[in-house]
Length: 299
Image (cartoon, rainbow, N blue to C red; front, side, top):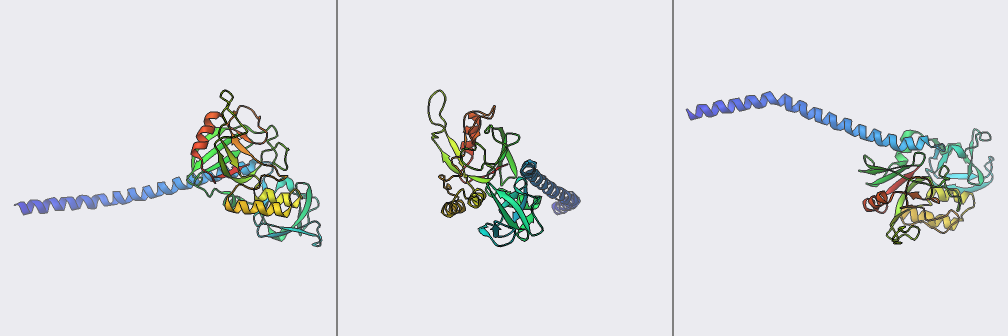
């Protein structure tokens, strides 16, 4: 009798499992689909955030160099100036379309007019820009200069952690070119130093030195343009290039200027010299959350 009951119970259990199998399989399939859709949505959001900031900038990138390229001082291939690195970019406001021709793009790097072979250039698109400018550190910072917003991401840019208001220089709208131009730089950087006692900002009541985060200005793009425009020499260029490759603090004592920081002081209006100002509360949170070498994008 017990055997019959056991067989009957087993049969019912098996029948139940067989009946639920399609449901379990469907649920698993639905879960996979949801996961894929959520991942696509997350990637799309990241793509949109960084690229929209890049593309909405009036100086948006038009070309990248596809390899190490030769730069000339004329359009006759005769006056060689220097080599520039692969993936150096050219902005819309740097191109002189009136005198560019079928072989060369004529552009202005700071004070100098140069010619770059078209064969060495590829037109920027969303895929290229995103691949070259995407975060490669777990945490990252994206700065939207035009809207005075800073976005802090986790999981290699896939998860937005925090969005804060910020203050810039009153001359925020241009990329930094040279010392004392009061402009906030633009490009891909990293946090190169967490300063526990900044000499540039003190608590208004206690007088204590407060924390700040140093941005790795000048980057390789800044150094390349500085070399072409003769604002720095080859030795200074190599020094910056070497430091950037090791994620050290780049040479801070050139004509390109130095010590671009994220610091305390308020975010209600544009008041900084060339740095990024946050509310004291946001600065405290950011300093504790962000680590050295974190990727940072300013556009």
